[in-house]
Length: 371
Image (cartoon, rainbow, N blue to C red; front, top):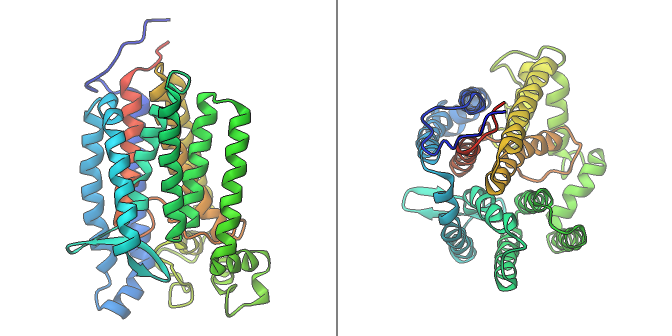
């Protein structure tokens, strides 16, 4: 066993880092193609430009890859130092969303900054990973006031996201924080108590927001209201089922022709399944499994607790969100409005995903075990 060597500048990339970069690039390209297939008809009919969504997504991907390369070049400790400022800035944007947010489909999740529309609840995701790694890696060394302050910040962030309302993102970030705390070895009693509070907050959100409760009812029995609350799920299941073994063929989906709502965002996986079939879905699952394996291997190989938590959190965020999106589209979970990473249309989500992928790669460039 040779002594591990730090790689602060990333001059010599480990194999896992190269593979993760390659897989992220493949994910980006395939995602853009799937979006092109899912969006061209509706974009042509509604906007007169079949490439409307693709061109804008390509610009966001370009910006996202620039940010990924910047994240990869800087030492992780620099990003960890900036995470506190970033979290507080993200918190401020969430507060601004309450007063100046753009409301779409009954939810105020977006801010309009000049000609650009951003979604703070997406942009804050990699910042949560970083600051959670800072907090949980030295939990027992932090003073009580520091623990309470950052726990309170996380709680307020989740509360503001719930208020938008955005139960899906709040749930995802809550699970992310809980799993990172569990990975860091926080007391199990404390974790169980936090899980109970999170569950109570979720139930309260369902009680306050009637449409979220309707989604639960539709999930349990979508056929009870096939033209109302169950319509989305029924159309998604029909799209997936009609794909069969090999699919209808690329760009040949029929459900995207005004049958399946949100087919370019939350339910884009249903279009993917319809066009590429069971075989295509199997390839996608294998891809996510390989990505998760590499991410967790990076976490296991990290000698620094903060790097380990960043790698774990980034992997959970990227792969976990994809699995949850697929579960919703197939009717395994209630509809939550969670985009598929790098497939669904949305600039803020693209930036968030690529920054998160950059953090995962950077964690592997810090210090790794070598046999």
